[in-house]
Length: 280
Image (cartoon, rainbow, N blue to C red; front, side, top):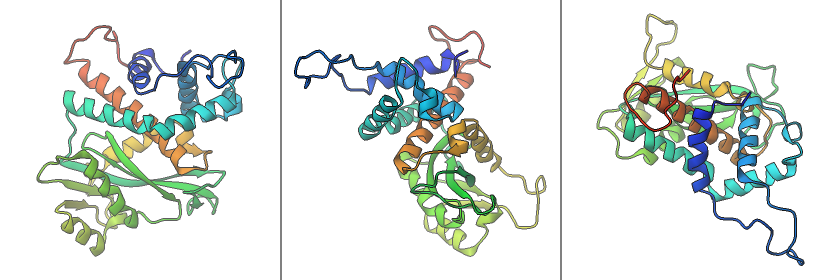
């Protein structure tokens, strides 16, 4: 059984391979000109999807077609080229062009996950007996399409992460004139309101002590997106130490979420060759 349905992975791979530079079949620096063939990028790409989905180690996912060392080196090569970040931006632009991002309604919230091995952006988790944890401050549009995230230790409060998270809006310009930011009660402070006012944003902040559905807002979209991201086990239990690698896996997951939402929403309104007969 494939790790993800082909109607999702095939269009993703077709765009991914365009971003990769051409590479010779054999390493040109070999003295005899006859080294082992370069492992296919498609094989490594499929391994990356398996790592993202199952969260297992590189050694566990390696087999006769590709070693763990090859996966790591190719992963770092693609990160240096910025392929994962560019792929995510292309997916967002395609979604905005075909369906349309709801940028006048923004939701921001934090999510704490496990980070067993620590790392550059890990910290003591206040909800896991002081074990190492990772917090991501995520921003989504009004439907829940992930727009970006800021990584920090699990011991960081959500409020200080709001400003760098909102800075990610600069990559999405032009923006609507009126933008409403939906936040939970953890952001309820005069400092947060002053921050939003300085940026010309309207805040819809939950009140402390009042539970949903009394004050239910569109904040649930970002909470649903957290659930989508945590379905990828490598994000729910982080085993990476470097922030660049963690962000690369997040970019890949966000791209999958965006493309999946694009296909599902366009499936009833658009026609194209090889359209899946059923989007489940």
